[in-house]
Image (tube, rainbow, N blue to C red; front, top):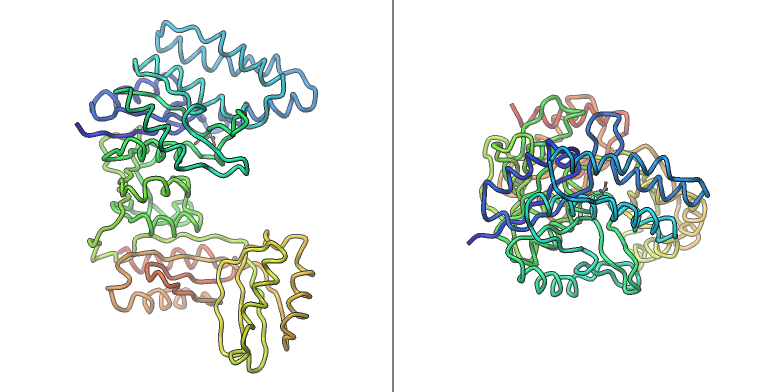
Amino acid sequence: MKVKVVKFGGSSLADAEHFKQVARIIKSDPSRRYVVPSAPGKRFKDDVKMTDMLYKCYEMIKNNESIDEYYEKIKERYNGIIEELGLDFDISGELEYVKNAMMHRSGRDYAASRGEYLNSLILSKYLGYTFVDAENVIFFRDNGTFDEEKTNAAMRAELMQHERAVIPGFYGVMPNGTIKTFSRGGSDITGSIVARAVEADLYENWTDVSGFMMADPRIVNDPCAIETITYRELRELSYMGATVLHEDAIFPVRYARIPINIRNTNRPDDAGTMIVAETAEYDTEKVITGIAGKKGFSVITIEKDMMNSEVGFGRKVLEVLEDNDVSFEHLPSGIDNMSIVLSTAALEGKRDKVLSSMNRSVRADTISIEDNLALIAVVGRAMVKAKGTAARIFDAISAAGVNIRMIDQGSSEISIIIGIEEHDFDKAMTAIYAEFVK
Ligand code: ASP
């Protein structure tokens, strides 16, 4: 029998109605055997996510405020779901335990993780599936990094014993037994870890959109959905700010080449986006797969005559960044100049020191820094094959009256990165999209 791992995001489990819908989806396909839930998300625009409520409890306790009243809201939400589902399950003991543990300072991550923990208990009861606590099967190392191999072995051994199971997303355990979470949105990573462990045929990631859009719908009007995207393309797009899936969620399934299907819980008949290891196929009409971008970059420009013949120049520049614990994004260089594109935030509090150290180290003719740069990544596996793609991108941008500050084709040949001024961001995105999608 095929095995599918299904992860449901917070909006898919925000209330009892959504729980029912989730159960229908799971039960409609017997291969949907392993389920990874998030904590309840927002039910309406100004609602508060359970995870944020729990973070708030943690802060209140830290400030010596009573959480008695606030915690009632958390209880009400879980009890409300149980009641509306008509479940014969008393979660009050668990809720009291969590409250007490939080008050005994069990940590910020512990508090946040309980959103997933409690939701998974309810869902496992509702589905009649075994509950497997992530704290027994997801491991972090002492330095806080995720221990992939230990986790994979333990998760595999555990899940092989259960035909069907619910595993809470978002958290695992440190070697000293304390709970640690992934970064926000990390249930996507848990889903991927589970998919790898059970060697799933497919990892379905159920959310509230019908897949990835070719561009950010807040900027481009009604963009097309992406049918198929490779891991590498997705990585490029998520790195540049396209959200939907946590950017680290690809790693666990990548080696096993398990495809991920982004699906919409509210529109289960939509095919969604398929994320695959590789595919030679592409849409000959659109050519590009997607566009994404981010603001908030700075560029340091170093000029020095005869730079290109000076051995060790690049190393000296990069050494300064390393010494200051600053990472860079791009390094486009000319004959007598080199630019370093990096996030403005990375330079905070270090800007003067970095510039003066660089000056000292390479004795440049000039060093300058400019802020308010935006980067746009145009991503597409077809770009290698389809001639003239770069020219089309640049023509479209210049026809929109936007000045290009930097171009970086990168060595991957699946993306072209363009640096522009922040105020031209929307204009450039719209122009590129319109050029490729008629
Ligand atoms: N509940 C966590 C968050 O809000 C993790 C997740 O939903 O994936 O970030």
